[in-house]
Length: 427
Image (tube, rainbow, N blue to C red; front, side, top):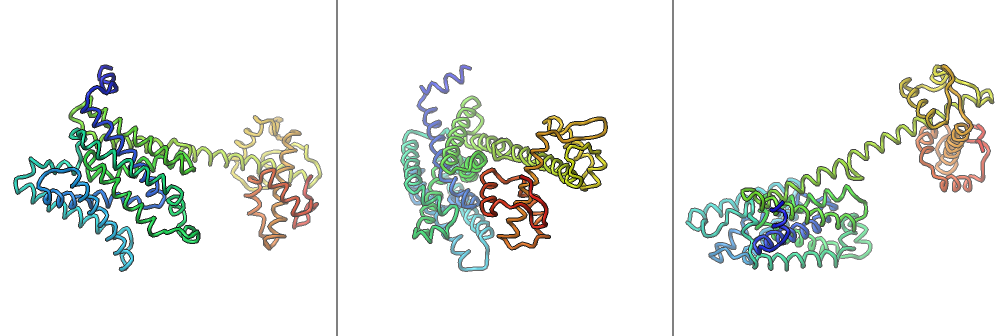
């Protein structure tokens, strides 16, 4: 508890630098990364994060010392060059994008390692701390670093918000953007530059190896919470900030634990939770799919009662399970579980081994049959589908037709009395 109070009291300047620096780089990277995820270019972040290393080494050799500003410029130039190279290879050769990314990533990173080895063997490694750029070391952040990060973060956020609408359009449909007259290539180049800048910002704290994760993971997690892009970007920024704060806190209470890797771990935990339990995640989707399957089964059973009753014009007659199965083939276990669910909803009642529609069950069955036959007639009249080919499509659509759509069907079909097969459509 004392560590928690001391950490959030923000009395220690060193802690403030680490916390604010981690949050700034995480938030700015997450905002830019949202559009990279939507454009399905997540591997680009990995390519950039590995490709900045030779630029860092070249900047160090040029400056002769560890100058953050110079190194960031070198990293930006190297990362930007890698993306230009990837686009050139993809456009001018038969090599596909993923192969080009792997090729450029490997070559640039290998070149960076060679240059770093040269610097280490020259005796400058201890003074440069250049090896820390591979995995990052947030604890080394100082006030001047924070100022640099703040400026870059503001540039990233302001640029992204300024072109938010344009980035959104090209993220979803570049061809539509071209039709609107938007400069797609220039916008794509701007987003590429912002991506490189976001990666470059975080290499000091997170490192070149892990920075791609901070670019992509918060955005990927946010994607499972909403379909609204503004909310997605906002959530990605929040997830990034939480990851930066948590990583800084863990390294504070356990000094042996590096901040950068823990930022990635926390971000990954948020992502895994989102993948499974967010509204668009695996568990809710599975539950919704199972619920829809049960609803369709229940409605098909009600429709089955009605169709059998049509034969003798007796909808209140009690039916056995075998009688229902003889009329329509379905799994006996599914039929029995569906009947039990309908019984709990008071749509059918059971008398010994017999089942019977209730009044509410009959009304619902009549509505389902009506929607099925209206849809069959619509497919036949307006879609030019043969009457003997419309049943399966109508079988699926009858469960999803809303009252509004039902009224539209009635209007188009002029309140029909029979379906394409001549069967009466119940009112």
